[in-house]
Image (cartoon, rainbow, N blue to C red; front, side, top):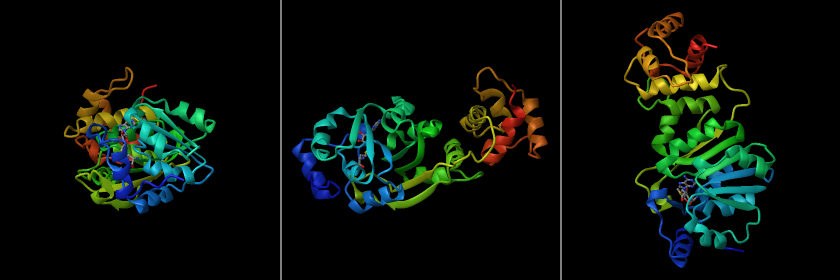
Length: 290
Ligand code: SAM
């Protein structure tokens, strides 16, 4: 049985054995604390019934324990130079498959199809911080493929995700998450739990997918409105939507936006950052042209 990697000494030893250095360009900060790794897997409520998608297994620290907890684990890793080390650290893990590719270029419904008969996967990851938001947005866009997402992110990203209307941290990602789940932070993780140490605290974010969307809206159009509003967040909503909407060939006039806002009892000079998910849903219903 391979030794578990989740300790400073085992991690240093294996990195040295394979002459591997953590690569900054891939956001490599390896976990070295077994309690944190177990805590993440517990927070994700992984059982033998589950097929887990692990984004960025790195040297296999969390993968070793996921392999024991889950029925099957499929990992997507961009850094092929980690192959020899993963072959060694995951030698006993017969239920783990690795796809050597960029998660942002991965066909996620194909993965669910190929590895879990089309049923939703559970995502568990210590995400690379340089691409956290694009990865989360991609997962949320393909949300039918996942029943839950449990990920380590920078604490400030978790704060942004949990922020509500009117707060400085509030943005398109807060709304994209609110449409998928109620975000919960399972734990705050200090830099000392990683090699190398990141410069900031991290947080484990748990998203358990709603069975039904929390609002009734044309999703594509609503998120086009949300993106346009936050791309130009200093502008009034009426200006941002008149000039910045990107949704097929639908265009909006200022008058249309102002009249919808007034019908909702909102000021014509309101900014998008003041609206919650329900208000964006209502606005999208009023502005959508068939
Ligand atoms: N899971 C390991 C752990 O907890 O120790 C490593 C986590 S490390 C923060 C992030 C991992 O994601 C690295 O292994 C990195 O190579 C990988 N990675 C970075 N960008 C990626 C991408 N676009 N697609 C897939 N994996 C990526």
